[in-house]
Image (cartoon, rainbow, N blue to C red; front, side, top):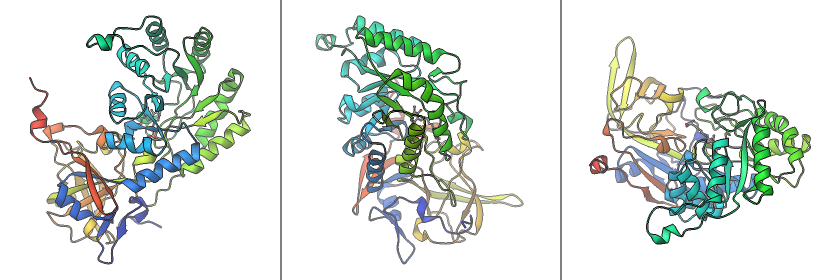
Amino acid sequence: MSIPTGPVDLSLLPSSSVVGDDGRLTIGGCDVVGLSEEFATPLFVYDEAHLRAACREAVAAWGDGVAYATKAFLCVAMARLAHEEGMCLDVSTGGELHVALIAGVPAERLVLHGNNKSTEELAAALSVGVGRIIVDSFDEIDRIERLIADPPALEGGPEDAEAPVRSRPKVLARITPGVEVHTHEFVRTGQEDSKFGFGLASGSAARAVERLAALDAAGVVEFVGIHAHLGSQVFALEPFAQAIDVLADFFAPLGLPELVVGGGLGVAYVNGEQAPTMAEWAESVRAACRRAGIADSVRVTAEPGRSIVAAAGVTLYRVGTVKDVPGHRTYVSVDGGMSDNPRPVLYGSGYEAFLPREADALRPVPIRLVGKHCETGDVVVAEGYVPDDLAVGDVLCTPVTGAYGHSMASNYNKVPRPAVVFVADGSARTVVRRETFDDLVRLDV
Ligand code: LLP
């Protein structure tokens, strides 16, 4: 059994992690304390082999069409990696679309999401020819119809003006099946009361499908499937099966070739937690599809984000102050905080912290790990434990920070965002450079 004052569970660390006889941690063959010296702190470190293996596992479990949800972590190198390993990419804004295209991912491997896609975003997606558009509202159907009937001259020179809006995009309708999952309410999306998709119970799903089928018949779009996303950081597989049960009666008569169950597979963040594997998730969804009589010919896929990148990444911080508040607690302050990991503040998420110079050490000392921002809520680990020789100047590591950390990072208090390095085979490469103070004023006019 895991106890909080024991060493960090090695299963939480990226897969190429090795703790040497001297207790020092290496990831991808790189000494972690050494990385903090070479690249400074705070620093996001990703294990490239872990990332690649996770993508391959997703493709093996779901088959072609499984998409990496880029919102979890996106930069040019990550987009390329996911594409190289055979995943499609789910992009949910014009910005994510731009990064994926800049990375050289072919447009047909992209899936466009979003509950409020602007006309410009849709026009861009149509003109490059994204592989799928997940339709989320009646307003969006109107916009797509208008854009295809009357392609706009895109902004820019005469060349751009001639850029064609490609005809007949493949579209899926996003349905909210009315299934609630046990996760933080901010990341629950499958319930009827949601800003996402078309509700099944209210009849709007039926109306949306009717309109898309009519547009398909008119040759405007190719209506290929149904999409449902229940929520994120979901540990139980039952809600996915339940969603299939609920959707099956609606889906089967449509005779559509594609069904997407969204993302949401949970990951272990702290000692003792356990999450299903990608293969278990896919198998349980497929079994539910078989039980519900969904034809084998239907392409059933998913859009994992967190489960691809979370455990592949760690954050390195340097300890700046250690303050005992008698009768209360000890505060350990590091050089980052809510600007590089807002999840504890937003969702009350828990993390482990340990010293990579002695990764196997017991952690008997209770502390609160906090950042350098000007508010009390700036907590990285609310109830943490550290080794008794932790000292100012030490490098602390928080594992499982590869998802929704860098991607939700901010410049609060004008703290520059950390660099991101990928490590593999004993070498480290910067994939996102650290922001400088000059970057903090680059948009000021
Ligand atoms: N597909 C759709 C339509 C989504 O909205 C999401 C996540 C995903 C796939 C990927 O879900 P994942 O496999 O990563 O759970 N910032 C929050 C998570 C928000 C998730 C939003 N949508 C967090 O830090 O926990």
